[in-house]
Each structure stands twice: as structure tokens, then as C-alpha cells.
Amino acid sequence: MAKTLIDVDDSTLRAAQEVLGTLTKKDTINRALAQVVTDSVRARAVQEEIERGSSGVYQRLLDPEVMAGVRR
Image (tube, rainbow, N blue to C red):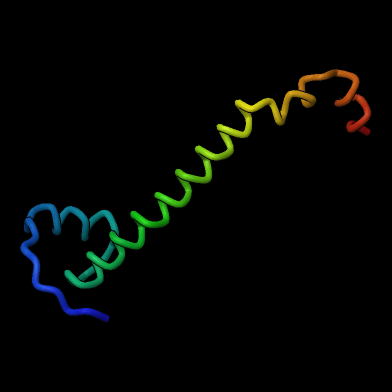
């Protein structure tokens, strides 16, 4: 793990600690960075699914005959 000296806004750090439930600066920053990565991956997956939907891949799901064959 790299050791990095950075200036961090104290009030923002305290707010992040409250939101994340962390006690130390190190834990707060590491948890916040991990959360940013997780959120980014999820957002990218959602965007890809929206693009798939826009391409018409799910169009058959709107066909009553197709869906009638699926329901039991």
C-alpha cells in the first residue's frame, strides 16, 4: 500500500466519516475510494443495459404471443 501525503478538507472528511461509519482518516478515504469504484462499475453496467434495451434486444418481450408462451 502506498503512503501519500494529501491535503483533505476537514469538514468534508468528517461528513464522509459520518456517512461511511468510519473512525479513522485512512479508513474513511479507503472506503470512499472503494465506493467510488463500485458505484462507477454499477453505473457503467446500467448504462450498457440501457443501450442494449435501446437497440431493441428486448422488443420481443412486448409481443403478447411471445409472452403468452412464457407464462404458465
